[in-house]
Image 1 (cartoon, one colour):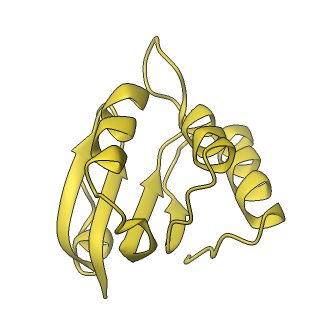
Image 2 (cartoon, rainbow, N blue to C red; image 1 turned 180 degrees about the horizontal axis):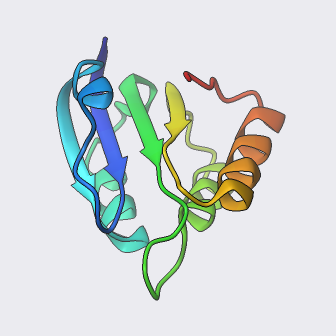
Length: 105
C-alpha cells in the first residue's frame, strides 16, 4: 500500500483498484492541479503512487505531467495508467519506464 495517491483525470472518479492501493489520495483534474498536489507533499514523493489519464480537456496532458516529473527530477514511488487514449497511454508508459520509474499494472 502507498501512503499517497494522485489520481489524474478531468472526468472520472478514482477506481476501486486505485483506492485499495493508497492510504490518502488527491484528485487532480488538470496538469496544474497535479503540480500543486505534488508540490505540497513536501519531500514525500517516493511514497506517491500516480494513476495517469492522458487527455485532460483543453489544457496540458498527463504526458506533460510525466515530463514535468522527469524535468524536475522527482522520484515518485510508482505509477499506472488508466487512460482511454492508447497512444497517449503508451507515450506516458514509455517515457517513465525508460527512466526506470516503476510501473504497477
